[in-house]
Length: 418
Image (tube, rainbow, N blue to C red; front, side, top):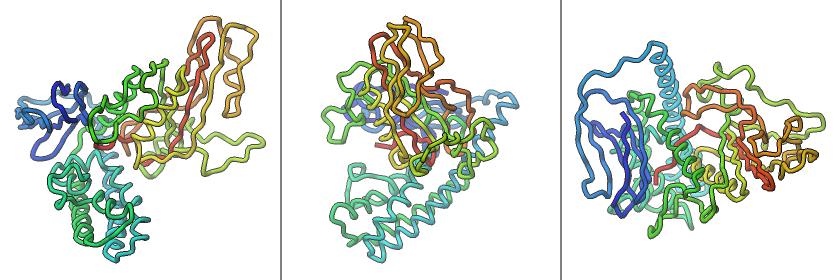
């Protein structure tokens, strides 16, 4: 079942949530006025509610009847494996969340503010990694993850962000012991719920679908997340490309060999051809600025548009991915002469020197790699050979700019709430 939603007249940012028995099965967030979107779920027979905060009629109930359509046996087996792997990964991440939150809250109670500041990010990171599942518990997620403008009475504000506010700026842990105690209790509650959670394949994929939707907006020359004029909150878009055309932007996401390890249960699924590149003679590689789990490459005729796409990706992944390295590059500036050679790219390589460049515009390869579909942590991926993979373009008299960023990631994730 695909639900298509739009914010036609609500003056404030809204979202659409599909719930059953108090649990959010799917949602489309950050629906600013005039923005639309969709999400897909496979629904069993039962009663459901659609909730749209800030709308005139903010809820609607409906009932699903009938029997679900039967899937082919091989498809069912593949989807079942994906869900099992994802669920196992989430449970492992929640176990780590419990351990790190215990250390964090213990330091809060001990009033060791320097230690608390050191332990905040490690604890918070594990929550970010499983947020798509955690926030499906609509009665628990606000206690863990609400920001001050999400609660009617600031005196009732709890969770990670309440302690974060106490730490910066200045910093005082006065009165934070009850907040720390409740946070630990809520995290243990989350762990208990996750042990029995039943996920659907579509739930796992919806995060990637949202991400692809945001890429499509940027490729169409639109601001990511829509306009946010008149709101006090920071805009969803970083703003570097406001007023610019799309400049034929393309975005390519690739996976590195390191993604296929014990963290997500993918160690036995790495394609044999997906191996670390050997060092070249004379290389002096810094391991801290090499390799990575995920690479993101944006190519456009305007370097500012490419930069804007990379920066938005970094913002979307904040708290889940950390940049290891980034590099600007460029393609051939013109195809008006058959005698012109390809330039040496800023990465140090000559770009596809054996490709014959005709006088007419054409797609060509700026880099090469292996790409797949980012589905979710622990889910099987289907790597495909991506000769070129970059989608960079060149046209007569125009410089093609590419911005590439590789990140070390806990897992691909959907945009953070709010």
